[in-house]
Length: 221
Image (cartoon, rainbow, N blue to C red; front, side, top):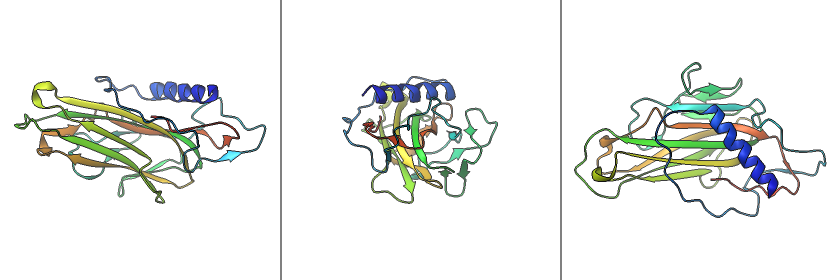
């Protein structure tokens, strides 16, 4: 629908404004066919005056960067959240729990969540096998299935020394919802690759408190 296209454009524009890290453009990633129904958890309202906001951020937003030299170990990704650090933005009330590696949102609403993942080769490998790295966005309280997933196939040494990809989604989050990004590497020589601190970011911003009735929102990728 036209409304969905406008919302997607506004979200993409906001990401460009908030995030401007240098680096090689993300490689194309396949996108599943959009659903004709709302994603699980999205709310509708019959209020005839309800509308999507003119400003897509509505004061609740966050962006984190990955820790420098982060190794590809299975488990939650460790993020940098210090205010004032290049690439880091946290609105008042948004909290990053360093103990659990979770981002906590203070207010309920529909959020545009995005993740740009970049891997770089730091050590010459001796294998030409098909290695890959997957990440999944998990929510607490738990919801069945990952809210967002991304898999990168790593090129063998003759074909390249980096891999990148982007995913985004519209999700309904409750007040106090906790989000984390989990890494699942499938690499025979894990020390040969690292997350790129210059070009790996994770963020979100609220685009609406409710979804107007009849707006056929679907997940964006």
